[in-house]
Length: 611
Image (cartoon, rainbow, N blue to C red):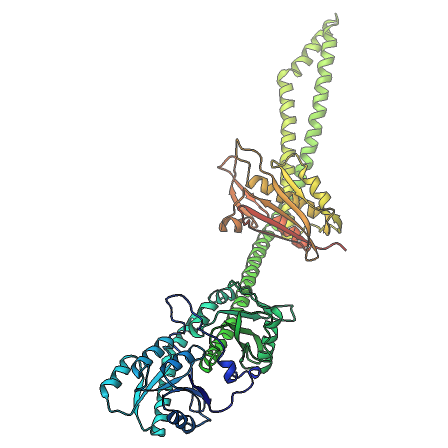
């Protein structure tokens, strides 16, 4: 077999160009996507011009003809490689790829028709021109049926041959626009970085066949590129990947290396034969690096593969930047939605607060007079009861005397202090007690209304051990749920003790009322965690029983009027966790509720750090 490279000298592999003749011939069969798939992509994305370095394979059994074509085609336009027959060309195509092949029709061993069929099977992308010294239209048409692009007669007209080669390459270029468009649409339709990474291997393989790929991307807070996880199982030294990516980014153009290159970085990996690295650029800023790898025995990367990969890398950089912007946009939208919810919540509380301030002002003075009157009535009832008992005792004493007048007086006293009088006094006393209980409930309601309106005083902040406070709260016998407190030790926060205690009790009471224990089932404890996160103290309450719907989640922080859960026909004002949220916000803390991954809900309090 005779294989000869004639044309412009290739540049050093380390400079982002293709390797020397010996380097580019290293390797074997090309990468394949599967047993039944073609080892090469079905379509190219090459966009070559007459000055783009078109690679041409000349196949002829006559040495003089091979030499004549090699020297006649302009060296600044064409890279010419020669083969002395069909079998030599097939062997050569196992090591590298060409844009165009020119094959003689009449050759010993493997004729032109057989050669065209074999070359098209190995590389469906390559355009083939058949040359013949015989005016055999039937044979030429047979070659075209096997996939040849066109035919030309010998002796060659170099101008006509050059024009035919450029037409073949132009056809290839136009045919490549469809897959490029399809891949671009598929890539740019991916909205998130995770989606891009999930489909990257498949999309890259459609354009540039490879054994494995590695994607290196910048991460926030890291000085060097981070290597994205891969599932191909190929062990590749991270230092070699970062070195190759550094070269590509520094050169701002693709870097192609083969195993025989003097600066081959993948040592001592024995399975790699060639590597192609693309810098991902967004404007002037590097956005990462894409590295394609082929194994030993596979052909090195060709010029056309380098160019189609360059187009894909540009699209990939744009897709990654779009995904990043989408992520930032979604985060900002979530922040805006959260801010809107906070504003709506604050507006509702402000509206309720104005109403509460008016109600509190209107009720405070009458309530104070009513309370004073009830206290006086209660005191009077006690005095009357004492007087009644004294009268009854005096009547009993007088009734035992022999004096008729004493007996008559005793009868009058007993008549006045009889059973009906005792019942009346008892009714007045009980009514006073019930009225005082009602007054206290109204006072507590007014206190809550003052808190909603912002009129209640803010409790002074201090350094509080919330672990100790939690342990005291969960021992409260009025709470109907068991608690499981988990903490590594004291957790200190800077909070107003009175407001924080009130808020915590409201939250615990809410959870106990909102998710009562099922009858006949063992108690399910409410898990309480306390600790530090990002320099701030937190309390996390995990309730496996309470599942919050979206509507229910919106309700728990809003004051509302609802039917009484016991009577069912009485309306009552339900503040939910609005007061707790308001009091916590006043001290610089926050309260959020979210679904629990394993079911139920999580309530999280984030508190100001202790000074």
